[in-house]
Length: 100
Image 1 (cartoon, rainbow, N blue to C red):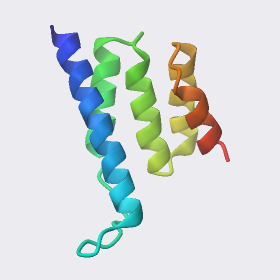
Image 2: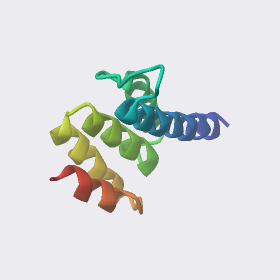
Image 3: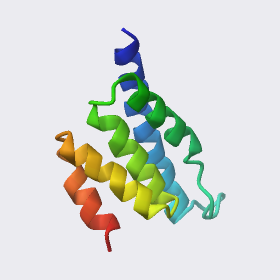
């Protein structure tokens, strides 16, 4: 049960991180672009997911994405490659995007 709850929470956190990333990148009329979006909660949750199930690619994918978005591309790409190694179908596109 704990793994299911962590996986569901990680999925929700990933979706919120993506949404936050989009709104921070474009801003809104009453909320200009945030130069430091809050990805630290995503990092911590992804690390917790990895600790619970190190063979689940989702934790590595979300950790890698959060790290790349914080301009920590070396570690981020390493985690995205680990997600790819574990079979995540989204990892290739993210590796390509953040390798540039």
